[in-house]
Length: 209
Image (cartoon, rainbow, N blue to C red; front, top):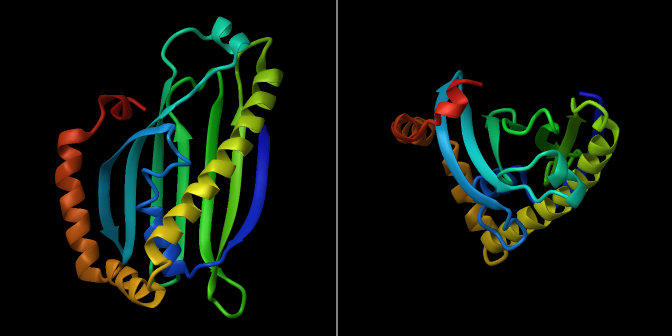
């Protein structure tokens, strides 16, 4: 991975609200390129919630890219998350598992409480991109970086839309409801149900990656 995108932003909602919204951000009008999302596995280890999801997204190519890589335009994305309700951290790690020779993209986001007041949430985001397509790696990586920035804007608007939808009426009551999501009993129940679903939906593609 050779291209690094590094940014930090503050979301004007509490960590409990943001972590709740992150699970419910799809679908939204700003992320129509996200076609499907499925939980592949979920379990609780040492008080932390570990989840792996598979997302399918459209991946429109520029005309010059279609000449290089013909074929389907949908891409599978693996998203792994680790939620620590005690230390108030929500970590996401995503990577594409298709078309990696054309462009491999990996992203890590850490959501934590911001500042001394702890009323807002900080997101530290890093992304790495690279192409191993001989003779085209530089323009493809530059293209991927610009597309990533554009998609990031849409993702930010999508999260903001979800936060407003969930909390604009009664944020105090909704915040209390979100805190209940991370109770130990709820953790175990959610993990158990997700594991049952994962057994039926696990993709053979992931099993080979």
